[in-house]
Amino acid sequence: MTRVSWLLLGALLTVATAAPAFGETTLEKLNRTGALTIGTRTGSPPFAFVNKQNEWVGFAIDLVEQAVKPALERKIGKPLKVEKKESTPPTRIPLLSSNAVDLIAGTMTHTRTRAESVDFSITYFVTGAQFLVKKGSPLKSIQDIAGKRIATQQGATNARILRERVPTAQLREFPDQPAAFQALVQGQVDAYTNDGIQLAGLQAKAPNPNDWEIVGDFYSYEPYGFAMRKNESDFRHLVDVGLMEAIESGKYFELYDKWFGPKGEVPYPLSPENRRFLQLQVVPR
Amino acid sequence: MNDQFEWSVLWSGQSGQWLLSGLLTTLRLSALAWVLAAILGVAAGALRTAPVRPLRILATAYVEFFRNVPLLVWMFFWYFGVPPLLPRPAQDWLFAHGAEFWAAVCALGVYHGARMSEVIRSGIRAIPRTQLEAAVATGLTTLQAYRLVILPIALRLIVPPATSESLNLLKNSSVALTISVAELTFQTRQIETYTARAIEALTAGTLIYLGLCVSIATVMGWVERRVAIPGLIAPGR
Image (tube, rainbow over all chains, first blue to last red; front, side):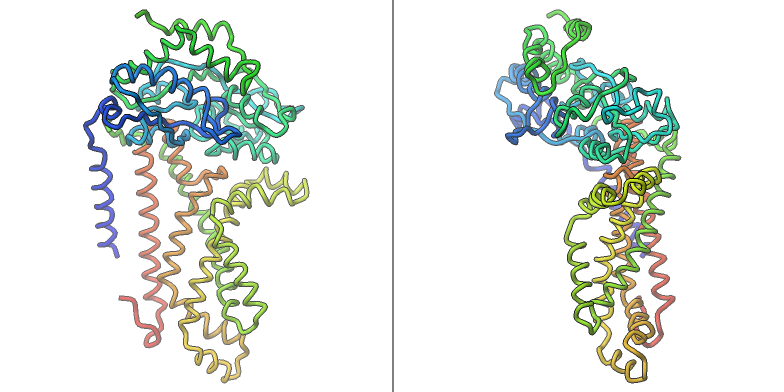
């Protein structure tokens, strides 16, 4: 028995250390396969979700298709196909480092800790964490959550902040947004916390949006960026160039209006500060 | 992969504490679910061989219903589906006292009970029919014959497949993270969230599961030899 176990352990470790030994850069991979594989979401409207017509669409996907893809195509000199894979907060970094995807285009906050493992593009969206509660709930902000049951999404930055700021709050962490929202609907938890824009998206998609409200000031700063494998500055530069050109040409704001405008999936006006912030990230040619 | 491994994330900060609490939750969840699965498994397995037709039908229905639906669905069923059937005060009490943990115990226990019963049924089937008849002929009732003769032999016969099934139960307890139970796999993800070091965290989790399963298998191998009835069942190795 034990001898067999040691053999197994040895085999496992050999496989684990020998597997990822490719020397190919991402640009070489794009050139060879003609496809850019992105890891994105199926349930985060309006960034990336499956709509009523069963199409996988969203703001982040549009930015990849219409801003990032053209910049990459110009560089490698041939058309690229965008392939989409589902990625969740716990799986997105492993997906990148195992070469299963080339770019994470979802709702990933750029943090200093994450930047030790992956590289980020310039910021393409700014939001902050808030709470989604049943309309009329006494819970109004982070000051009211002590002792309360709060659903969060595992792998997101919010749970960490809550654990540090309000250690007495009872966190229930779910791997995906629909399960967390279901727990809120049934009263298993008192509130669901996530980035404000995600809550707005969830509320807009709920069967009865008016039963819910988003409360509290932003208790965190969540700048979203596209994540890439580390130490590939040529690829990252092209992704940044694509985003900068879209902001410069107004394409970005057109897409913003398509998804967040008054007629969009989730109406969420762009504040003048955020518009200015986006424009200031564009460095000269 | 062009970044270096950094194994120190596993013992710096709170990682060690998280892994330990995850391990304890996994063990508590698996142990409770195992007790439930063993009770249901023995009952259903015995009933499926019982000489009373309605009992056989009842046991078969339980087994086929519960083992043929994915465990993930059962997790959601016990967590999201069952509480709304209870009166409001009972719901509130449950939600405040770890509803997700007990839902996971039920899901895991009932699901594996159905699978366990098939193992036990095979054990009972492996015993020649004459054994039951001989037991009854000595004046035992059918119930007594099952309790005193058939089940004690069957339970010894099934130690190897039941060990396998128990290890499956332990590993399947990781599905409970979908309903927010903070077990071992959940905690490895937690480390990943804090440190962005997925490979290191997953490796730690893998090694802990492996260690746990190997120790259980070793203990069960010892139990198997220990309880063997000399001359009745050939000793395993």
